[in-house]
Every structure is written in C-alpha cells, then in structure tokens.
Length: 444
Image (cartoon, rainbow, N blue to C red; front, side):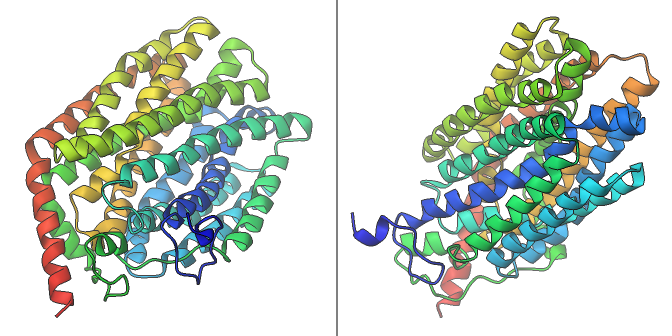
C-alpha cells in the first residue's frame, strides 16, 4: 500500500483508491448529526407535554412538521444536487440545520416548535440527494450497495445517539440542553470537514472503471419536467418510490412514537425509553444494512433486479415482527421483536438509493432521490400525525396502531417483488444504454 493511501488526503489532492471509503466515513459523521438532530424531539416529547400540556395530536404535529417541509422541498433539493457543487450543499446544509437545532431550545409554544422543526427540514432536505449522488460517483456497481449500506449505519447510530443522549441530557439538565449540544457539535464538524471533502466529477467512478478520463465534461442535468416524463416510462422506479412511501411511514411511526410508548406503558425513565426505543432496533439495522449491502452487490451480478429483490426480502422478513411489537405485553418480548424488525429493516434500507440508481441515468440521481424523499417523507409525516390523531380522538391504543402498520410492510414487499422481477431488467438496460450514448456524445 502506498504511503499516500494511509492518510486522509486534503480536498484538493488527487485521491488514492482508498479515498472513496474515506468519503463514506466523513459523510457518516455528518449523517449522524442529521438524524440525531431530528430525533431528539421524540425523546423529550413527554417533557414537552408535562411542561406545556401538549396533546398527542400536538406532539404529532410538531414531529410531522419536519417531515412535511422536508418532503415539500425535496424535489428542489434533488434538482439543485444535480446542478451545483455537492460539497457546498452538504456542508452548507449541516451549518443551517445545526443553527436551527440549537434554536429549538428557545421554543415554548406549538407554533414555535412547528416553525423550527420545519426550518430544520428545509436545511436537512439537501443532504441526502447531494450525498448519495456524491457517493455514487466514487463507487461503481461493484461496491455501491456496500458503500451506501455502510453510510446507512449512520442513520441508525444517529437515531440511537439522538434519542438516548437527548433523554439523558434532558434528565440531567433540562429538555433544552440536547438541542444546544447537538447544534454546536454539528457546526464544529462542518468546519473540520471543509478541509478534506472533495467534489468528484459526475459519474466519475464509472468513467475511471471504463478507462475514460475523470475530468471529462460532466453529463448535463435535465429539467424536472423532462425527468418526470422519463420516470413515467420507468415502472420499476415508480414502484420503488411507492415502496419507499410505505416503508418510510412505518419506520418513522416506530421511531417517533416508541419512546413515548415505552415510557407510558412500561414506566421507563426518559433515558431508558430513549435508549430502548432506538438501540436494539437500530443496532440490528446496522447489522442488517451491512448484510443487505453485501447480498445486494452479489445479487446484482446474478440478476439485474438483484438489489430490489434483496429489499423485498427485508420487507417480507419484517412483517411479523412489526405486528408482534405492537402486541407485546412485556419488555423482553418487545425488545426481541424490535431487534428482529430492525435486522429486516436494515436489509431493506441498505439498498433504497442503490436500487433507484440502477434504473435511472447517472445525471438524474439527485433528482430521483429528491422526488423519492418527497413521497417517502410525506408518507412518514402522514403516518406519524395519523397515529397521534388516532390515539387522541379514537378508541385505539398505541400498541394497536403500531401493529396495524404491518399491513403496509406487506404491500411494500409485493411492490418490490413486482419491480425486481417484472420491470427492473428492461429499465436497467435502458438506463445503461442512455448513459453510454451520452458519454460517447460528450467525448466527440
């Protein structure tokens, strides 16, 4: 191994072959705070109810406001990510959402929390389209699922850290302290990573793999209207987005309401409820994400829809454990079901973006992710708010509401099976042909 590959190069240095994994590592820490910041409010929801007398419906509105603004602005974030420097978008977004997170500590009314949570959604919406596009330009289909699967583990770690640390700091000081701590840490991280994160060329990894020069002219982004027209003729992509709508709504219902469910039904402290609601599920998801990434990279070499079929496997495995989690009457069984659900969820999550990138042109990747985020997080907001409405106005327990979401996961599994088997082979061939044709045109 060369000496230069043993150390992290600066952003301006030519990267060695190991730099693509350094990129995943740097983005991992940004994504950790991306999720820790957004999840902290879930851990302190009972404190807000005690201090300000908020109802479940109001808490649901506060939590969902992030998701809805995140969803509404996601298509714009996708278009911006395909047109502008992604390093600037990623680090700029980190600074914005870190400032807003710190400002949460000064809220005292429902509309205050709705405003700052919505503002945080606006800041964070630029992160994933730009980041996944950037990662895909460092990793070809041989390592893309593994890279994105490893990055996905930061989502789980950030969820654990956000809920557990927020609960602990709220108990040690007050509910405001975690927001100030997370905000300051995010701003410091942004300053450090400005020195080392490098912006690659669009489709750089595939160019280098094929022997082309990395500094060739980038493929041009296209207008959103044209992209939508292409998408309507790509059924596998449409099914993947629909599946993400369902899977994300279930995942966020569990993340948003489980801390309160544990505290209210099992008499846990804030710290223990935050820890138990996230640790077992998310650690299992880390393992599942790594497994899912490895399985999908291998499955992709055997079948064009291999990544999508790997996702369907994860969804199928998760159905019974979602149902049983809502019906559990003791902590031991609940933890076991959450852990097994988390393992299945990780297999699905590892391939969300890699599957979509298989069926769309490289210059549309950020736009595709932005559109998917809009649909998926709109579903998450509706599901989270709907649970609050159901438990406030209807004769439905939180456990019954959680168990009922297993039906959604069953639909997700069916959509993915259809996409992977019926439509993915044709759509992947067409995307690859279009990319090759455009690359040939740009070289002449």
